[in-house]
Image: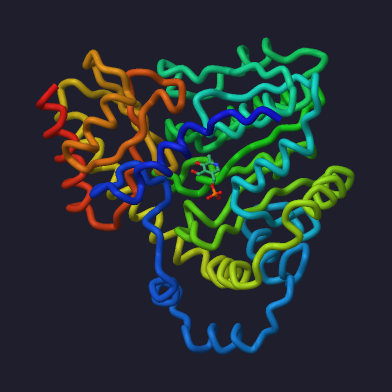
Length: 376
Ligand SMILES: Cc1ncc(COP(=O)(O)O)c(C=O)c1O
């Protein structure tokens, strides 16, 4: 198999550990275990004592009952037998797409998005069509265009909701329209919803397509809304018994089970989901206000205000390639953002604005960007 470079991950791997301000981070400010216990009001000693007495086996191959319960509680109609645990959402996307997609299949993916959604189908030998999300549409899916891309061979439609990098969030009607198209064409609807629940408005849509459509396959993880990327715990959900059997069989070859410790931490966190989510929503909302003010104060920058998630695309009108801009800025000011070209969006940069719980810290990172822009 010819492997396509994963642009955003390569960019992060190269620079993430050496920058001063990581305005490229996409997780809501990750917690320590001590902070996790503090937020959730639990006892570190009780948790550790309980865990320390367990033999370190492969654990529950299909996920511990407590973890599966915690995941099910995030949806309306999901039962434990619908959930498959994985190593992060990255592992889930990989498992789902390499299981579903065969050479010659037609796959549609939104663009821009996380590269897995179109690169893996391409590497599997599929014919991939991309549905470009337009700035004028606030990066929402245009149902008419999506319908026009579908043909008799379309097997999978991939969406990412809320979207990385744009922060766009589909309304309930828009999501229903996508589901209706998938149903009409009898396609799988794969939805990477790793930023789900991180909404800016309390009454924004948090519906998952798994609660709307029997051929939906949804993917999420503990990394973004739950601030626990370090445990590498994700999942995919399908209500199809046949697909589940294939996914589990495939998973036997490359995963076996998720780590017992990772599962225990994830189950504990999801057992206190309300508290963690309240913290994450506070961070994304307070930080977006700072970003919004900053963009408005910068004459060469513009953006579509994100509705959810932790990222936004900021466009600039300087005559410089986005990789060059980002590298020069990093070297000059120690501030890391992601080049828009990593998402095929030239003349832009992706900001991850939930990288700190301290708005002054965020302001310093943005001020460092401003200082660099003055030199252009
Ligand atoms: C849309 C999207 N999907 C999946 C992932 C991978 O997340 P995880 O840490 O759960 O593997 C990311 C990480 O940035 C992402 O943005």
